[in-house]
Image (cartoon, rainbow, N blue to C red; front, top):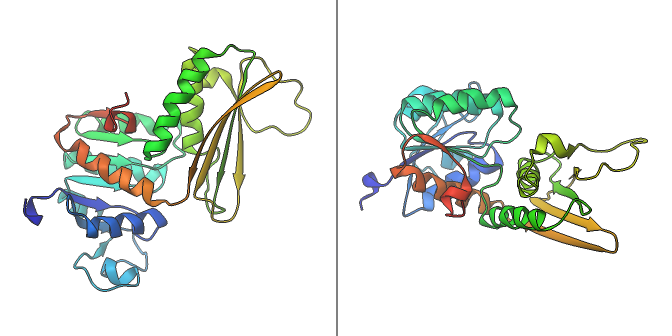
Length: 272
């Protein structure tokens, strides 16, 4: 397969940690090609070659602020930005009939309505975490929660770098949802947010969350099942954010022959 036959991928948020990681991996890829990179209008990188902007040599791909023209040339868009930006990109990606891989977290219920509408025209693959290990952890969490009774308390504890702006993490919420599904319930009905002050005793069957922010922690997630006299701890530690970028690229390639619809990493990895 010639380079021109490889799926062309656009990366949004080019100057961010994930944006730069994705750009570097795609430039080295033998299965996909980087055809465009986007930044918000007015950003210092716009008009610069992405290779030079990242401190290297020119690679022939210019950072753009024109989302319409850039996405029009894509077979896939990989997007780790903000909920508002991802919603806007979803409409453009649907118009281009391209695969939209969304790793953005922090969505509100209202944000999901336009995403669902866009998925009627093109594939959207959305996950709070793109790693194989985390998606396996979700499956284990669901099974353990189903096997244990409500006398086992469930706590999800996550840690991330100081720059992360949302809490709990998207991955923590995914794990909480898996635990709730294992118990045959909705996370909205069982969730207990971060505790402070005199909270009273724990409600039976609830799922609690704790978030830690500091340093350059890439991502750590524990699902704790605690009963009188014993605990089970399921843990995933991420030490290199490249695992998320590689997973996102894998999702973009997987989606090339898929019809319109909403998918997640369990679908991509055959774990659904």
